[in-house]
Image (cartoon, rainbow, N blue to C red):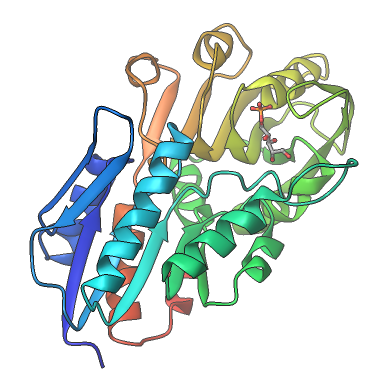
Length: 314
Ligand code: R5P
């Protein structure tokens, strides 16, 4: 059993870390984290962490490389300060989409990041909706993989949607969408998405499944440029779908994503707070952010007391 539970946040998502800390009932540990004028990062833990069970809350979202390096140096500082166990809570795992060598001479950056975290001294990773479940296997340390599905399912159940159907924008997300459809007790449709040139350029050819006269819930792990979902919404519109909603765990929302969503057939986009909202996204009336803080806090408390996490999936 671990004696002291400590929570540390980098700069990646302080509002989420503060919310988690208030649910756990433990204040964030005081640290100094800054960049020198030469752009090198520095961290100092201002409290004793010797023998502590430390949870670092740091999604590796934008600025991805800075947040990743900050996480690595916090781990290193904790290791050298004799923390007993170092748990990395990475609600959004950056580089997750670089998970296979699907072209000649490309890296598998998701695996490289797993190696960096492990070599730095991480003892465990807690994350949410990895782009691919298999990324857990990139680690040789325990990975607690949590899901936003219970939170979205509860929200949609409360909305009492008429005749819903869950739509996965591509076959890769079908299992995830099927799990939501099962919870909502409704049908599933799948977009036939073909990739053209690179990850940001995709072409949607058709929708497989019955969507006519239904309320579509587009469901994906990440919304980045928004292109994938907006293209599916365009096709759905031609198939007499009544309403179009979208739900994605990680609201990366880069480039003109918010503007494009505003101009799209998507009526509401539900995301979680794994990634902090930009000002533009926060002021967009189509975007609704649901909090995962309670779920993360419950996971942290259970990991600390060595209890099963299965209850969090219900
Ligand atoms: C791809 O396989 C992912 O699950 C997402 O569909 C994709 O990354 C979303 O990116 P974007 O919003 O740029 O289309």
